[in-house]
Image (tube, rainbow, N blue to C red; front, side, top):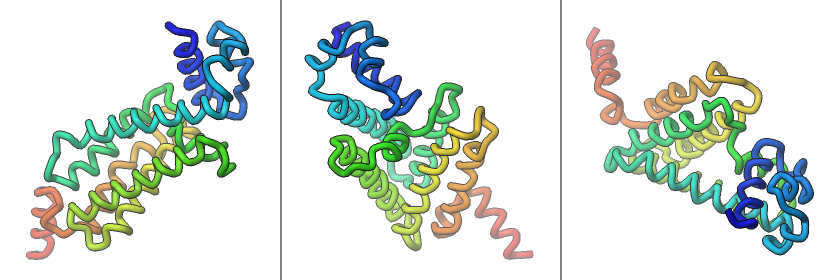
Length: 204
């Protein structure tokens, strides 16, 4: 593996496990089996390396998003559920430390940091996608539903930092998503079992 690739892979792992501010150039170079001179030949600065790591993370995140919804074309409700199912599958792993981009947002508060804009654009696109899917699903208030879904996605990932294993709040995320969808979407968009139950109650 090229020195640059080793540095990049090592930095991504260290930033995710230990935090961006906690990891210096010396630590990255040492862990990658190289030195500071090679680091600065590969990257102009640590900040630029952080930004590149975040850009790759964004690309991978949207690849997972698109893959998760591909099988449910034309069924926006099911696509929304699939996005959360994909997130839960990744976040429930024993080695998960939350969302790398949300974690970075907490640390990179300066507007001038090159990674700051990467995070802002990513979060804005996630919000846009959720609102668009809510509208496609026929939500009574797609903007409100889209924002509520984003809050659930963000909050679910953050709880993984404080609750180990799969028994924390993260385990109830999908149920919360479905409750939200039931509240905002017309009855015709609910699963058949729920429609039948509602009809039975109404006729009683």
